[in-house]
Image (tube, rainbow, N blue to C red; front, side, top):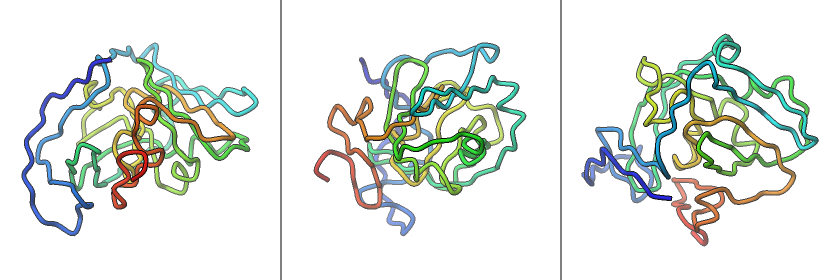
Amino acid sequence: MSIISRGFGGRRREPSPDLPPGQYLAHDFPVLSAGPTPKIPLDRWQFSIITETGEKHTWNWAEFTALPAEEITVDIHCVTKWSKLGTGWKGVSLDTLFEDVEIAGDYVMAHSYGGYTTNIPLEDLLDGRAWIAYEYDGEPLHPEHGGPARLLIPHLYFWKSAKWVDGLRMMHEDEPGFWEAGGYHMYGDPWREQRYHGD
C-alpha cells in the first residue's frame, strides 16, 4: 500500500509549551494517507458499533447527523512530527454513540472505508475524549482529511484518528491495527513520544 503525502509544509521548529516533544508547528494541514482517498456517497455511508457478541448498532448519514453534535477546538499531533494548534471541528461524541450499547470489552478496533484499522482502548473514546467528526473549520470535512466523517482522538497521535471511519468493533484483548502491525506504538501518546514499539 503506497503512502500519499501531499501538502507537507516543511519543518519549522518554533518553541511552544503546547507542542509535545519532537514536534514542530504546522500552519497548513498536511495530508498523509495509507492508500487512495475513498469517495463515499452520503446515501451509502453508515457507521456501526459491533459488540463482542456480534450485536450491531448502525446509523446512516441522516440518523447520524441528527444526533446531538459538539463544536470542538483541539490541538492535533501527527507521528511524522507536525502539530496543528486550535483546530476547530464539529462531531458526535463517542459518549453519545455508546449510550445504548451494552459492552464488556476494554478495547476497540476502528475500521475505515478502504480497509484501514487502528486499535484504541475503550477508555480513550469515552468521557468527552473522542468524537466522530464531520466538519472542519466550519465546512464539511474534505475527503482528503477523512470526510465525510473521521474519528477524532486529539490526545493520541493522529494516526489513531482514523479517516473515513465506518465502524468500531469491540474486543476483549488488544490487537494491532494497520500501522501498529507495521511497528508503530500500540497506544501512541504524543507527550510520551510513543511513536514506535519500544518507545
